[in-house]
Length: 208
Image 1 (cartoon, helix red, strand yellow):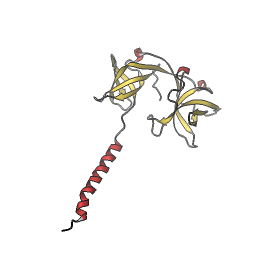
Image 2 (spheres, one colour):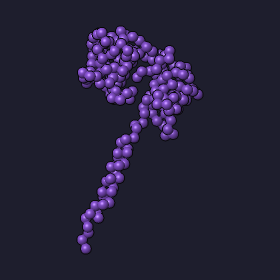
Image 3 (tube, rainbow, N blue to C red):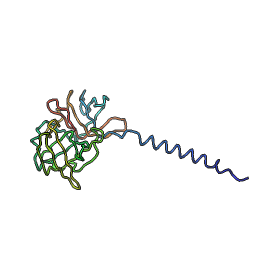
Image 4 (cartoon, rainbow, N blue to C red):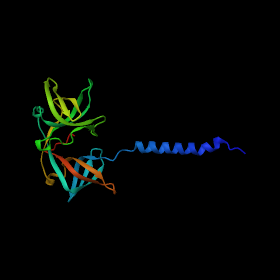
């Protein structure tokens, strides 16, 4: 008796549906965070308890070679032609990029992370680390042309845009109430290991 092809096809169709459903579920899972932003609630040796910006309590285990930097406010006028900066931006109405924040790297950090990449501060935000090649002052702030290897961007910086820089700091500043951004990887137990932390000075929330 010849086999009914529709009967043979049913298991394959079912398998395909299950596979597609599984792939869709995997694709919708949130990526493992590589940055934690929040306020330190407790410091116990090399472990920090942080209330993240989403309201979660996060355990951070600091590595033995942890790098701690301070983040402090500067003025828009401190951004000069030739400055190496990082700018978090979102798309502007005219094809430019509107700055959410700008941080000016000290000279010994020039070249850090040069390039442009998606960023997780806001939806559709991008981080661009580049050198300022032009700066045009206007009534509504500055327009910067920043150049990096392989590209350039026009960045609009309003007078209200936070502008900060990095300064020397150490682990003693990682105390209760300090606001931080930590660069992390997730450990098997669900906690996070941090090898670099930026801490806001004078109550500043790191804007990046």
